Image 1: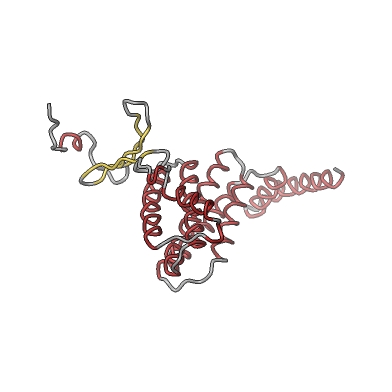
Image 2: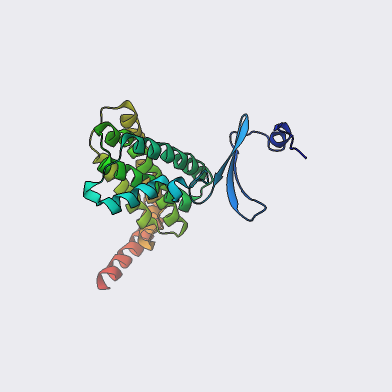
Length: 251
């Protein structure tokens, strides 16, 4: 019996909502996939491996295939042809769309995995492309990928209450973006500034949310007491702060 090619019933069962348009479902074979509801259709991504489930050249991805080629040819002698680069660029877009939706789902480990993968792609093309324009093509988006990568890594650390590690990750990403060579492309300039602004804001949020020591809490209470002109309370807080500082010096 032929299936009805009309998709209206399928789409009606999942109404389009731009604020809630991504889901992970388990298929009949037990495999998890990510589905994205679009205004006029549904996209489906493999959660692991290449997003479209294809195996170019018999490898998990075109990037894996070309990395293996470079090892066999001798890394320093290997070059990517323009057609190789187009294949890699198109594949990178597939991973971009997947990690964009994974980010929306707050799936930080998989977003980190896919952004790590695309940063590897950027580095590989910049090192091996035969044409200079291919070497430079992806660099305009590097600030953006560094930002999403750092946010994902930081969120993983924050989930474990490792605020200092999260802050270090964000500040390291800021340093990397600031150190990027200047590119005369509007996309690069926009993404660099937007990424720096977002990472500075995240760093501020992490610093504000850090667990406070007893001394830090007392100093905040002292400031509040003085501001409210509760001088008797302020005097008691100063005594407690003085004792704590003396104990710290002894230890």
